[in-house]
Length: 542
Ligand code: GLC
Image 1 (tube, rainbow, N blue to C red):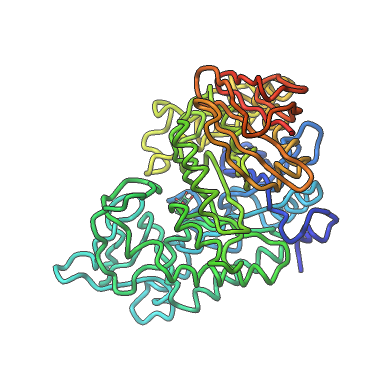
Image 2 (image 1 turned 60 degrees about the vertical axis):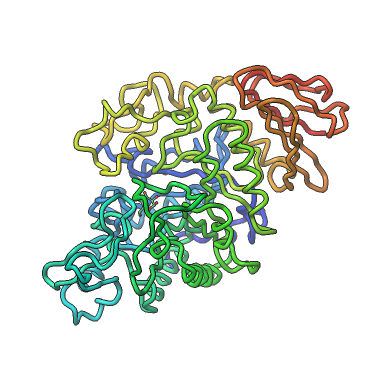
């Protein structure tokens, strides 16, 4: 095997089989993290130069793993989510050798390394699609989804793509339509064809053999579509959760989340099982009751983890937050672990959506809840979305996501320490929010993230413990217990703008020791007399 060895063989002591239980994963959008060669685009060497910020150094944030959004060769119609070669690195990010070095450097400091797997579609420039497109007799034709025009001469079905418009694109040369669930430059692979499953399995093996510790699996609910291309009905779903892009007003009944998707996931899992200690994190914008099946129907044979986006998509309001947490706890199958993110490269940053004044409370929520916490680079310093007025026109991303992808702000200089050249996207406000400025300030948001993550790592209750909600503690107050065999931690969070007096009769009063708070509060507290300040969170060992 070439490349670095996997982490479990280099002396990391945590349970190798479920190291992700209670882990914090840090999402890096590679174009925007750190640019080592001055071309204005982030790269692998840039990431390698910033690992001290993440783990294994004094003052590091203290995450367990990093996940890189795609770094593969791509014509960038969807910024790397349109892949033209699954087993190489795009030149602008570096080389396979750089990637090997980065993986080794991560492992040397106990940091796991996850990549993005995009199994549902390729780029129109992928050789598989170019071959498929060459003609109806091409041996690769059936690797993608082709159909004749519908009876009226238009598309074969009414399916709408995630970013708007029909999911069907006419291919003049071969006189058929091909299917694309996202942009037309992202033709959907045909997962009903076993050759596709075998080829993607080999892609996974290629990276696992290089020491990659797992994959975030992109848009998996789009893997399988109805084989008869039946028309989607109008949307009357009571609990639809908005995914990406516009709302087509249709229920994607026949085009997303089909029952056969579970065969696809089981296949991915089988491949992952060939390599010990690897994790698969599914991405699917689904209500938790449907997402639950992606974690296996009673058997541990599908994803290890799957993003529950309900929390991200919830307004910052006590009842909504309560519902999101309760649904997650109630509907996750036994022995599975919820996975939460509050921001990512597709969604408005939470400091913008919920407001910067709530950034500390949001960090506290994410890191004290039971589950895997996925941080999006920049949230630890409170980065906000770019004002559309400063963004390029025309935008890079047609779906309007440039504002969530601006470069990381390392220092207060105009380029934020991100690049010595001209950044590919403008920076938002490096002078007011940056790593260097917050690193030595104990009152900063960055210091709070570090404290929260350190406390969680050291606490069996916060990292692995069970969750039990306590209701009716006080207006606007969220409360729950995290319980392990050897430790109990009471978590209180005031979601409101006013004071939050707490009635903790249910917890039987007494005193407790504050293990972490969003404020400077520390020491012992009397549980009978707690009054939270606006947006304050405190975790108390009882
Ligand atoms: C995922 C990605 C998003 C991309 C889409 C299509 O949702 O996060 O950025 O556009 O899939 O690959």
